[in-house]
Amino acid sequence: MKIAIRDQDAFIRAFAHLAEAFSAKTGHPVEVESFPIEEHYRQLFSGDHDLHLTLTDWLAEAVEREAVFPLPFELSTDQYTSGLIDVVTYQENAMALPFHDGPQVLHYRKDLFNDGVEAYNYAQKTGRDLDPPNHWDEFVDIALYFTRPEQGLWGTCFAMAPDGHNNVYDFTVQLWARGGELVDETARRATFDSLAGQQGLQFLWDCFHEYRIADPRGLEMNSVQSGQYYASGRAAMMVNWVGFAVTADLETSAIRGKNKCRPVPLSPSGSRPSLNVFWTLTVREPSEITEAFLRFVAEDAQDLAVTRLGCNGVKLDTWRNVMLYREFPNLGIIEECHRGARGLPKTAAFPKIVEYLNEAIRATVHDRVAVNESLPQAAELATRWWQSQP
Image (cartoon, rainbow, N blue to C red; front, side, top):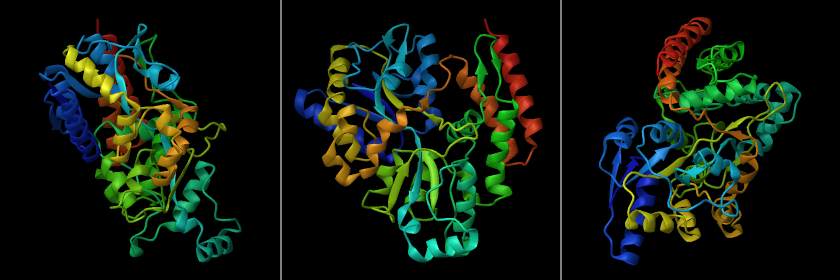
């Protein structure tokens, strides 16, 4: 049996464990191949693997193109949140097994916030207590205070590599925070160029070029690199996947035991929109062996094991495991953050729409094209393409 995964260290460690443990239990050999993310996406449709580690962004397209088969068993709300099950369900069929999850949250260095000298200096400078930000405006103010490039410290970090992933996800959170939507599926129209979208993209531009609270190297970082950057101790805060709380608490982290998580800052409307994007296992070639492997991965013990290896388990029992909190205390926030998390549009057109949006974000944040030029042009092209499809 062959499995295709993304070439991410945590995934490589997790699937090495799963393959070895499954083979020892059943006698069936398991071959795991890892790919860079762009090639990994192509393998979903053209590869010869039995199972594929699939991002939920790609699932609707995979379902429409019949590149994946339904799971051979149902997912229970006794084991998974309804939010996870809803995202992977199409026409009442569970099309993927949740594997690695965690909505976006605020990460912050509690050692900096609890430092008496820092608290005193911040209060003297601003007249306010140094508390983790509850609003996005507070996020910027506190990031400005901690931005000290000469000391190797920045207020925050972003993953703005133009790869159509975290740059799009960070934009989406800012769009939703202002009441906007990515698309109108009924009209087959891209709507990310609304005033809310333009304000959201302007905020990301400002963080790099106006406020200068983020290391410019973040313009070329992907999500994994940004999580590693934060774990190196070079940023005071970041809004990123809760799974990076595990990265921050690994033995290799410079801030082990110093990171803390809380829900994302409040939006201007008073909501806390977060993003529910996650990795799943999909079936490309159904067989008794693939079913046995999926059931094995879905065991509580394996979900717990991959969490300890740097992934983020998806089962309620893992999230509620008191013993695990001793190793990774920030995992206790996952269930709470799921309540305000939203999934991306479940349309097969979405990966192509993201290509246009990715280009608009790149043009503005990297090349400084005005938001009222980049977003409307991208939305027009995306809409024209979408409406030309059968």
